[in-house]
Amino acid sequence: MIMTLTEHDFINLTNEFSQHKDNFSYEGKKALFNYLEELEEEDFQIEFDYISLCCDYSEYDNLDDLFEAYDLSLLMIKNKTEVIEFYKYDLDNFKTNDYKSYIIRNF
Image 1 (tube, rainbow, N blue to C red):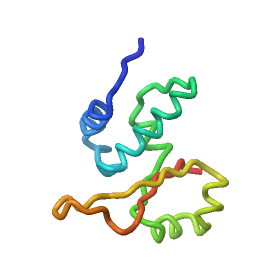
Image 2 (image 1 turned 90 degrees about the horizontal axis):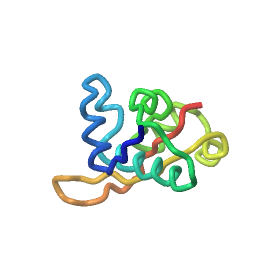
Image 3 (image 1 turned 30 degrees about the horizontal axis):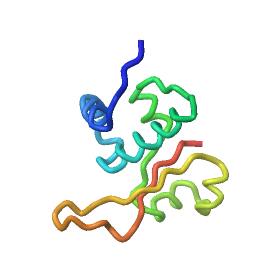
Image 4 (image 1 turned 90 degrees about the vertical axis):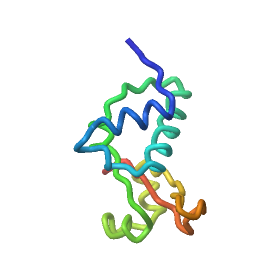
């Protein structure tokens, strides 16, 4: 049985996992959903398993945090695994922060 999720459904469902709801930021959840949806467009169905996603992917606020975790250049990381780049927003000022954030598939 397959249920189609919208971005809104995906975010709401992830927020129901009390211990893991903060594994990804709001913008990170949107970016991850869009990435997974693109994979599905390539004839690859994905079963929604948020705990598995939390184990498989990690979010980093900026390049410094990513480099601290992996001690590799962004290009080297991209050659080893999936990298999702996205911007976070300053909700108080409705501006895009001046840096990207990253979700990577753990390796």
